[in-house]
Length: 302
Ligand code: SF4
Image (cartoon, rainbow, N blue to C red; front, top):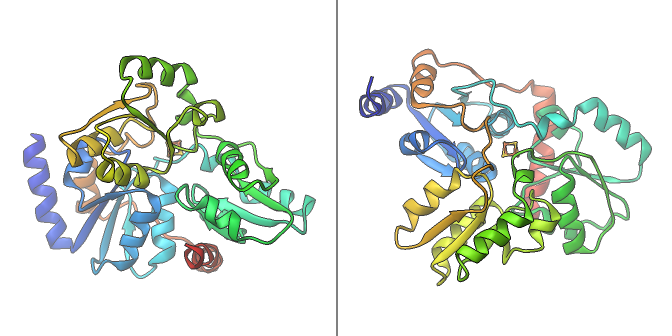
């Protein structure tokens, strides 16, 4: 079947099911093309919470669909590829976090949204790459645990001048972007501004003009007078940046920064998910209530 026929079928079925399709900024162009909304994990979860649709087709990785389900348990949240998980989120289990908490019983536990629902249920407060610095600034506690990304923790610690107890997690995609990639691209494009995600290595972050989440990258690209950008994050965002700003140029810092899990969803899988209403992601109620508290505390701060 041609992609055009597929997208027509998807749109027809979407109406019949009263469904919306949410796609993360790192998804394949063919997925972004059929999405009702694109964004980062928090933006998409907030949209999920507001929608009047009965079915949410979440095109991203597992913890994102879980977060949507935590915020809107009355909706059917389905993933076109249930095996698309985030390796960083998988680097910390609920048992491991329990152990860490017993080592630092007085610490406030802050967790990146890239965590499982079971881990979120044990957090004091959740954060995203957009608001991590503000969340830490708002805390009065002397001891702070930050999980699971050690590079985001390093960035936040430097920005807030707070000492943070870290977990040894990282994003296998963002660490592929090296300082020499930024320097090389700067030579090719001397007038370009450098935007990088805080999941990148500290040596890469040190070379950036802007350190920001993907939603902030989209905003900066739109609002800035600059015309050229070197982009240090997963390459999928380049498609959206170019589409939103056809008069500007965007250069990936490294073509190697590809998240294989984000690329597992295709239009064929979306069609199948809508036909079968599968695979559903639902968080057990006890865990959901606790995880929701950690997310709500974050929403009160930002
Ligand atoms: S890009 Fe990194 S943090 Fe994002 S889903 Fe892939 S592995 Fe996880």
